[in-house]
Length: 157
Image (cartoon, rainbow, N blue to C red; front, side, top):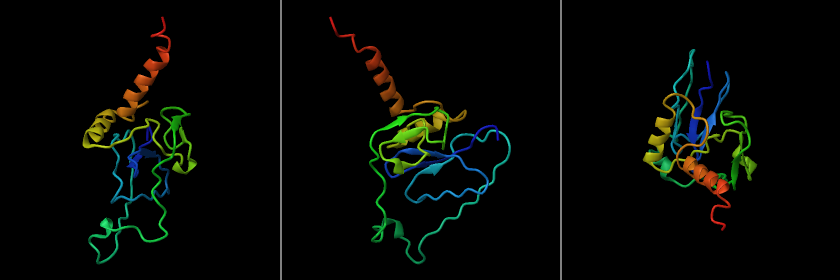
């Protein structure tokens, strides 16, 4: 491969995780509840995946039920997150959050999807390959923050 081909998984708080896989890796995620895809085009070479989907037997509405007692709660609030690594360093801990349980796969783009429009924006941003830097609402927030940082003294007279 000419570049990593990440598995993109949106967690229970709509945060994008981009997981780089090596031969023999296994990735577990709740595919019935977490949007997942590979939106970036494969660049060079071949790639084979094996997906094993499962669900409880004889219970077609299993996904609508509460989790059994003892199931860990989804990790929703991880505190403030920031890009500390390179913006193209997927699966390398480029984003660090106050709660380290979020792990090393949070996307360096800091992208979150809360609507179909957001997902379409992500799809467009990845058409030519992985985007470098913030996308979507995070990009707008980053631009606003940059403007605020460069304009700290703008209103002083």
